Image (cartoon, rainbow, N blue to C red; front, side, top):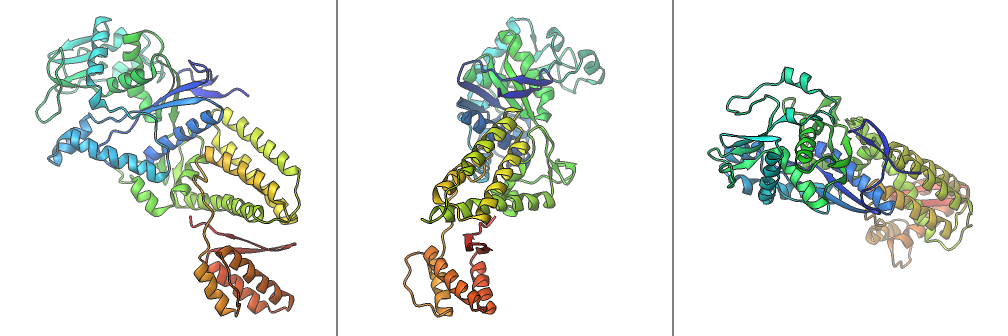
Length: 488
């Protein structure tokens, strides 16, 4: 199948053909670093992390650029309120925000250009826009003339005439038309400023992304993304000013992520329902949060509720249960190899790729993983699956879960040997063991002996004591199996 992407610009799914064969150049609007990152940010950047992972799986070399907006009205206001230099203030929050994404398990972009370090590039682009007749200088400010750009509104599907009806000029603005937007703002007291041909000042927000995306990815590049709230005016303005500077063609595919809801409501300061990433990972394991987002299509608006998170946790536990059971059998030398496992893996691969090739349909991709888990689980229940078959199934589960950001850097759980030896003393077992795993096997043999003697009290006691250590015991047709339950 050919990968298809829903392109906001055309309003339909299109076959993906990169500008350069074998390479994908992707730009995603980054954070404005004036406070800690919240789970709305996580929603967007996890979606593009998955998109990048799948593109890499398909063999593309991905160049992923995500800017840092460190020159902005909100940053200046917050810094001034705290008596700090705006650039220093934004530097502090840049590190916090990136560390928050690390803690959540979201891979970093390849390049993080900062707006403050590209002001000269912005001045050069503004000069081109003025020279091409799309902008004008007004008392030290520079404005983009929206009516000069005839295709304005092509991304957001709005008409200039309709936009003009609701637009107005804010006090202190020096623009000719209410729709015109600032490319350069003249210096004001208490703000960072740079020298320019139009006097000291600072760049407007929209020009920052046009400059940083094209500087590192060229014109045109493949994918430009962000949250749905950026379609207008930010991305609309980016298209206008970039094409005004360089001609037609900026980004070929525009992708927008559905906005997160908290208990059915839009996340906003006025409601007071903003949840920072730091708060979220105190409430839930980062992988549970990732699972929740990965189980939703990137264009849908996920609803963050306690019930949804508990469902995500239970589903993730199901994945780990089978992953760990396969690990248990893979270490055993006995067992029967099963050729059907190979077929299950091929079916998983086919269905997973079919889902992801259809505009990165992660819910359907997740469904293919759970179908695979159910089939493997039935095999584990019915027969003593051989180590080779278990290894094949486990590696496939790991591979496709990794694309959805799950089972990252997963390690086998360690059994505390001292606690196992404590149970040896309780049950009168006098044996020397080199690992906790070996100790569990001996305890289960003692339990099996008790079951044969119908000493249910002893058998249940051993099982319950192991459960207190996080070791789940399951009785099957061929005897007891166990795995160390993950703490999620």
